[in-house]
Length: 413
Image 1 (tube, helix red, strand yellow):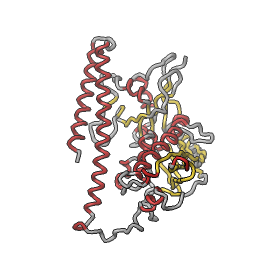
Image 2 (cartoon, one colour):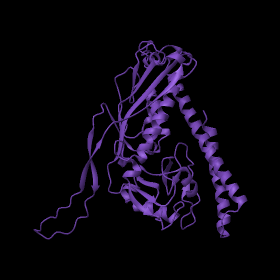
Image 3 (cartoon, rainbow, N blue to C red):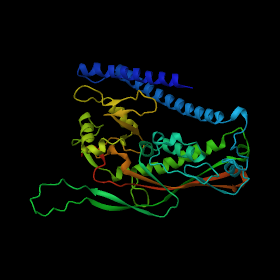
Image 4 (cartoon, one colour):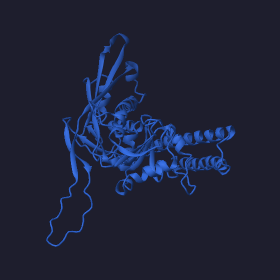
């Protein structure tokens, strides 16, 4: 429906980027920094570029919703109910609506990858839409998880996700070192031992939760998409809390975050306070061995302000390292790999781990199958508000610490 407009926005982004590059190229050719007018033009152009990206994302989401609705309508033969039509009692969302409006019990569980009221569930290896989420019929859980992904760069970048039906600790092997290369052995000689080094890591189920309140009038107003509202609010709140720990968690009574678990790749020069240089990023890219950096799951993670500086960097051939996406549905790239931003990544500073790169699928995210919702009419009885609380249980850990994901740190003081 919006394909033409989306393609137009993609073309506008490409044009805006060419204009921004032209400003930088003039200053570089003259061996100087941007003057005040050029800096203003560049910043305005980059803001326009980001605004175009946001508009594109909104239209892509609207396009998907329209396609889902059209597919549902197309399934109706000549306007009649399909042969497998459900009554209200079988409606996969009926239990949820009844719970929201107080016609059912106080507790409700949204389960992974299945419509409400059915027994099937699925487990995705990754949560990104490209990995299969877009092919699954939307349910309340899917909508909730999608909002969770939107606010967590780690989940958006494609970790390996384990959905478990219960929350007891699970132990999985962790690679700490690979076998070294084999050598020549003389006839009859003893083959040397050359084994990889393994450890173990336990994935727990830390509980994240929050409460929100709505009026009884809103809950009973059928013209309001309250299910969508709850999915959006719960997904974002849980994503902000859980997502922050997936990046910077200490591993003690919380997930072991990606930044915490990653290994050193490149350190800036002594006293280097600002953003990494082009050489720093190229060195970081090649500090990750080929099997990891060539993986389809290899990606960059940075803070927005760091990305703003990275956009200006060129390699030795004069090519910009950062390239805006010109294909709908794909992220922008840095040195040919997707780049994601998250406010929880540290900014540039002395000793600060401000850039991450590597095979994100080596990071495991554990999600317990259900996200539990509970409601109370009594908690805010004197204000006639319904109080909802949402609870998620999960954990995260890097299972390959041999160098699958590395970081750039600012120089020492």
